[in-house]
Structures are given as structure tokens and as C-alpha cells.
Amino acid sequence: QVQLVESGGGLVQAGGSLRLSCAASGRTLSSDGMGWFRQAPGKEREFVAAIAWSDGSFVIGSSVKGRFTISRDNAKNMVFLQMNSLKPEDTAVYHCATNPRYSDSGHRYEYDDWGQGTQVTVSS
Image 1 (cartoon, rainbow, N blue to C red):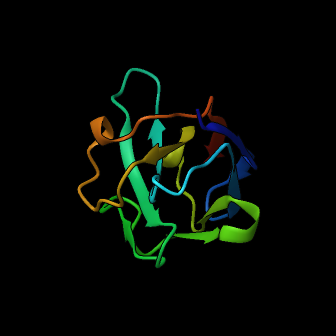
Image 2: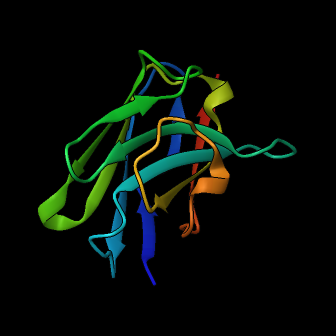
């Protein structure tokens, strides 16, 4: 089973930046997709971004497109989420998750293993 540990969250002012990291251990070659999702209090989990381990294909969710980017380091089994121009509405717990196949659908039901998440709070 894959274990995922997110880090890099914190408190930042609107307009600021944060870089989230997701460390994956126990990853197998059959798991090609990694995604980031976020969940704010009282709201459903929302797709943020996804990337393929194999070729780096990626997709960014519409609500963060142009502000967030996703990248990976295969040698270190890590995935990153660079968040720029942060807004108060970006406040949420951010989770990374694995997908057996890379997918640009954004459906959370395609993802098997989830990390505990890291809190991001953006103040106005």
C-alpha cells in the first residue's frame, strides 16, 4: 500500500505563494497518476491538479488554472503543487492521492490512496 505525506501548508496573505509537497512511499510501477485535491469546511472535495509519473502529462483544475502548477520528481517519489496568487477562497486542506492510471477527468473516485492532508489558510 502506498503511503502519502503532504507538507508545505501554512498561513499566507492573499497574493502570496506556497509550495506543497507530497512524498510517496511504497509506490509501485502500476500507479501512474498522482493528484491534488482540496476540501474546505462544509464543501465537497475539489480536484486541483493531476500528473503522470511516466511522461509528466498534467492537468490543472479550472478554479486554479493560471495560478497553480504541478510537477514531480520521479527519483524522489515526490509531487509538488506550486500555488501562486493565492486567494482566500483557496483556503482548504490539500490532499494528494494516487490513481492507477493518469487521468484528466478530475473524478476523485478514480483515486485509491490518500494522504492526511496539509492545511492552507489564505488571509485577506
